[in-house]
Length: 310
Image (cartoon, rainbow, N blue to C red):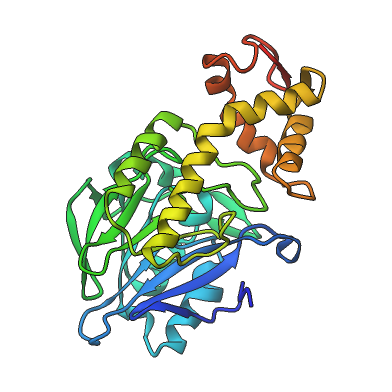
């Protein structure tokens, strides 16, 4: 059961609950969602924390009902931690703060992303300031557990994870992309060099429970355990990033050496065995354009929607 958009929390580990929101409007067509996490103290002593707030409506329609089902008044939420500043993780921030009075914590490098405002799914989201800037490797106390702030750059400059050394739990947001998911089709990695280095550091943590925010291919889970499954997931992350340039070259060659962004993105998804268009694949591909030019996979200087083999 996908349990998307129900407001029913699923306990992943004692005191750690997942709440799934839709990643994109046609959810029924795609195996994808965005997860927020509710952290509670199994001893019942410390206040509640939330990791990521989802879309503008997520706090009201999903997080507050999930808290109620666990027996918590909204005022028990003390802290909201953002793993990074992409829209599906932060647009509910101000709504959750208004409903609970919680503080908002985010890495210094991604804090600027909170300045966006607008409307999504018919709900407004507002520019705001964080209450605390998190720094790499500092230790924070959340819901009765101690967590180290782990820098996980690559997907965004300031992506972070929360790592509990005692139980070897890593809540990693979108930082570990594996082979992406049905909606994107391609991993979104503006800084592939930082991503490669980050994968090596994560491999050395000895993670036993890996908790990403999306069901990334090929394992399609938001709780990877035991350690052998975590290793398999990290191997998928590394293989995907190492083979990307070769995959783009092969796809362009199959298309006669040149293609539009849409055609190339569709071909890449097809070559990966995805049997339908991925709505964000063209956007994900465009993120890598300068990288592919720099490493000599595609020709430099072409218009933005034209891709030629170098």
